[in-house]
Figure 1 (cartoon, rainbow, N blue to C red):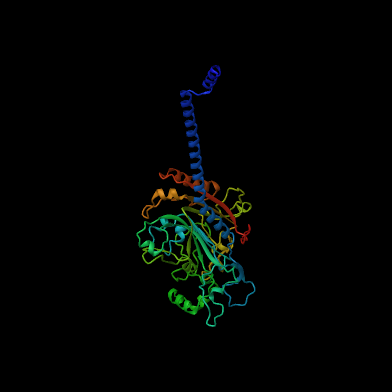
Figure 2: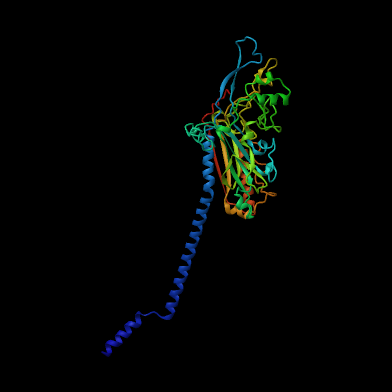
Length: 451
């Protein structure tokens, strides 16, 4: 019995751990758990950051795709019409010209919004509206007809446009810097303002689109009195060309020059944009106005760059001698501006002397063509980066100043884009950003090399 107990003691002693071994093992376990915890924590941080970035840029991505889809539906609904300066005489050789009451307009936002100047802005036009903008028409069927019933309790105004979901309406896109819209009860709480760059979508209801509205007698009399012309001269025009100030634009100046396609300094917006850009107080306590028909598409969109251009196989058709360099992307809009109501290139007839109907200022020359391709670029930053910057209306970041003004080849565009990214990287706030770009083919465009 004693022998067996001693044997058991020896066996038990061989299987036990010493205190040092236990301490070493515990230390190793703690170290391993520390490494595992650090790895898991780092993985969680990476996952959280990735998820946050995806969520932050999801709104920008959705807005970008929506903007591209709607741009692809742009239309001008052109037609051919006879014109002759001496239409009172009996002739058979009338001139025919392509006409279009709708318009496609794109270019630097400060050039479009400058005249007539928008009022009650928190800063200059260039600071509040950086980058580019575009305005066009399409079969979007947007209406704001209020609900109601007729006197006979039949279907009311709310159903007037129910079955016409392809009505022509106007839309536009631009970036605006400022405070967000908020209800009056929030404003009364002295809640801090939230200044951000926001992508705006402007939708003019179909029932308020005035571009194809025929002038009334009252309108004609007012314009005749203001512009010192006869009523006959007024009614001889096929299209009533006037600006937002109700001044008759006998020779529509256009946003772009017909020969150089450069941006005109004296551009005045056409009359239909007066309704589109109507501004009103966003609340009873607000000191500044907002666009009545504009809504926020996405926050923290710092720049939108719009470049109308030809298809690759047509590039070089507007220049002599003809060039076939595929990198030549700026000949249609060398200053990023395009106006469908202006001829996009000079022709022999434009320079002809004598009886030239193109020089008759009663009938402004128009080309009425859509760009076949529009390159859309959008730059967005995330919300944490915007929160760190603490924007103020008096000193907003000017990341796009001096950029995207002129373009000839693709290298010009890429150089400006690289400079914009450099400015973002050098910003003390180190904003996280994304660049979205896409070439949108406009299906209604009928561009050919002979246009």
